[in-house]
Length: 358
Image: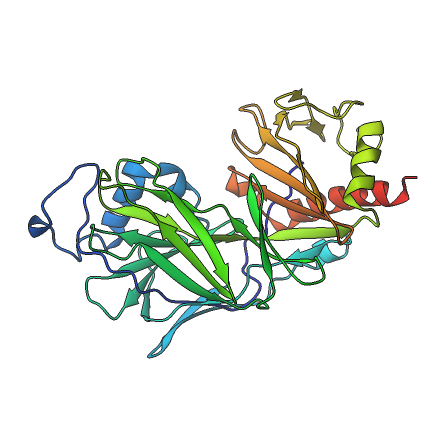
């Protein structure tokens, strides 16, 4: 069973952007003099662009009825109602929502005719950015329209300045001074209009997250980049990462509460014929990661999986003696309160099993 991140954004999220885009093409290079700089800003053009070069990104849109974007002269605030997650909290789960983020210069909000996507207006008439709601959080899509456009985008994040960025193979955890996870950030992503990956990375300094995109001169514009924040749920295990690893490697299915789990700790790419209530949850084992303060592993869904091929889940055991669970589910219709309650209860059993283990 995968734990779906909440489809609501629990705290107010302040967004804006200074994203200068001087031209846009889809799949082919066209002289900028032949391009209407505003032509990509309407819903049809944006949808077409994503469908052509980034279909999986477009498919991740998940409308959220609780979001309420508000623009002002000094920026754009995207406020949300507090989520009703009592069914999760009753299970012992603690919600770790995306943080409040603020970037200057977005002074207007338009909801294009694409569910789950907002256009953010900026002061420059040729600039545009998009907020995309996803079932596991939200993504800010920034665009590099030409070689003259900015290639670094900074976001002021409402986290303590002594927060550190802990990057793993799948996710980035924003870790507080007491080793607690304060927010979860997806790995940086950037691609050109042909869908080719472009090198990108994050830096973090005193509460400011900056995404850097390194162009080589061979890209087809536009180049799209994003920071994408996601929800986490955490559980008290009462065990250090070292202790958890020892327990699970002594008997995996004695503690992992899903039918079909093997007795021995799974190896990389091992097929796991998991089932939940007669539903097929077949997946393969991901890579095990071990650091001085963490023990991490996860699963990748096969095409037979109830959640859809490529869905993922990650379990991170950290030095605050807590389990953090993150999931991405490709079949978005599953993401509802009843399902989240069942998933949260299941992982609470996992944490309890570990807490009670000797």
